[in-house]
Length: 334
Image (cartoon, rainbow, N blue to C red):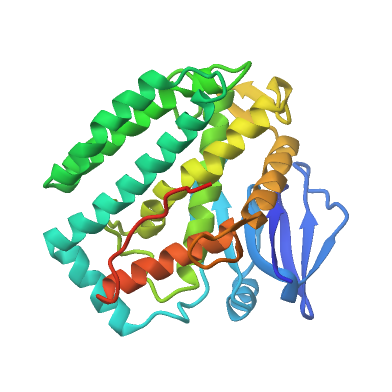
């Protein structure tokens, strides 16, 4: 069974027959004990330390359909090596472009992304409000913003509404999370422990959404809510809006409130706050457990993993773009 591997230490990646050989290298250039990974077991590589690999190595990874996702010093996603787009189809590319170019069609999809995200944020707030965490003020304000989504006529206006909803949602984090203070959202670098967790978990969410898109016929560079750019897979940003409350935020609430992650798991330096490498491993393991966790799908009548839910969301979007079935975003029923 294929799985995701996380490379936290700087090192060298090479090939030994049909096996990946990762050799950690310290700051003095000394090599550590190599680790051998059978290539048939690898789905993705998440790289958090500097990685030395040549073009032959990337050719080998590409032929084996292995994506490599890179993160910077601040644990933010910076880019990916993606194998050749083996599932892309001309028909789907044209359909995506038509829905992007036509303002009414683009707005319809963009609204659905924000409606799904807002619903899932509210679901989290209501869950904790029912457990003696007073989030009622944030719930009421977000509920007042939601009707504005349907009346928005421009993408920037829609993004402004989304920004207000998310800012209001983040205000409740100080109520939900015990023993930590978030304050304002900060990214480059994160100013405190909660912001560091958000940045790290959001990057993981973005990457898993990108991987799901890659395994469909969708083109990850053609998006609807976020503006497509030359150097980013912006459709994954769209999709991540729906899944950040479900995967990233719930993971953060759980790990901090259960004290699986504590203040000692962070480094405070350079006017910022980052997870220690050993702590990133803890969060990554919990992330893997989360995306593999299953729930009973109310439409399919069977249990599916959270990771599969993201792929199902891609299929729903595909049907909408091909005018088969109107897209309705995932809204938590559990």
